[in-house]
Image 1 (tube, rainbow, N blue to C red):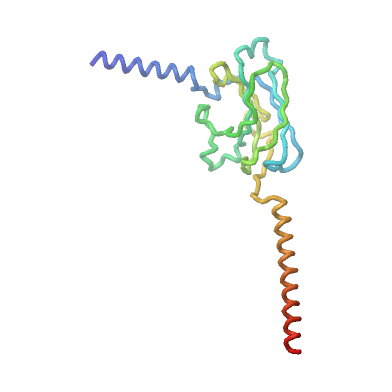
Image 2: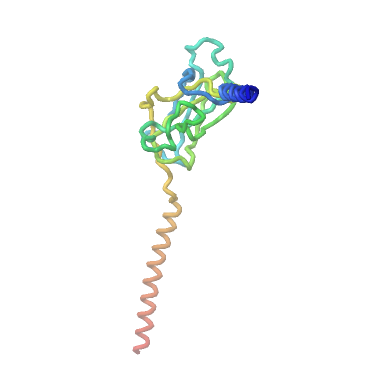
Length: 203
């Protein structure tokens, strides 16, 4: 019995250790060492059409070597609090493996200690909501070790709105109008043809 408890205890200890080392990262434990900006045209942005220019880099106020463990940069499009209300599938969790704030990947690439910029076309599957941009620095185990975002800690500034695609396209609307016009012309032509035919019958 004692041996069984010892084995069980060892397994639990190892599991907890593995979770700590690989993936059990809390957002509150991360330091905000990255500077992130997001620029775009004014007004409502349209998914599948508009672009966002994202820039990121290490905050130079931190001492040299701060980014020594950074191996990968992951930039994501994230829901603002106003678009998370009553939507559990967008809920913010401190445990990053459970967090659903940032569900849309903009880019993931090897980390560079120089400032980088990317122009990203908003993907067609992005829903209507209010967003911000966040970047995570990942270590060699692919765990988040630092972050930055284009908004303040409460996620209330520099937000932007995106409108989902409606499922209709301009070419479909044009085709619909043309078909309607053709139908009207055909109907008028048929009416006059029948009228002429009726007139000949009476003669």
